Image (cartoon, rainbow, N blue to C red):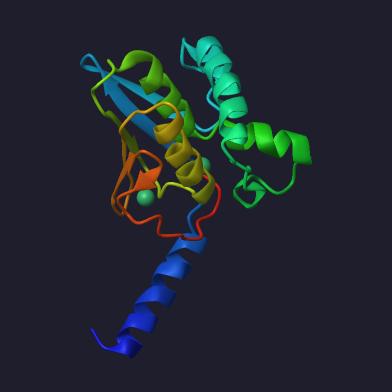
Length: 163
Ligand code: ZN
Ligand code: ZN
């Protein structure tokens, strides 16, 4: 691919990212049952324990240097709420559910209907390190294989609208 074609490709994919307005959801399979979460899910029966585990993880993540990237939160809400909404993006809920249900030693495999957002990418990276779990997120463009705080995509940074 020539340099100019490359630039055109990048522009095209940036444009595509800007028009993504679909609601974000993701899922994982535990013991042949598919568990689906929406961002800010209110339906899954285990939400109370998931939120509890999330809170506990949030403290550990912040100690490890995690700073919520509010650019990925909805814009028309108050700062404090932004952090809470960000924490409840569907792929974070899936990962936390996976931490609770997938036997230690097995990877946690999550699928996402959109591209994983930048904040979730950072958060899942940190979670893989502090919880010592292998986490694989398949989004619409690639596999992200998180292990010991590194992702197979090389932490490639991209700009995606909130999930
Ligand atoms: Zn996210
Ligand atoms: Zn990645």
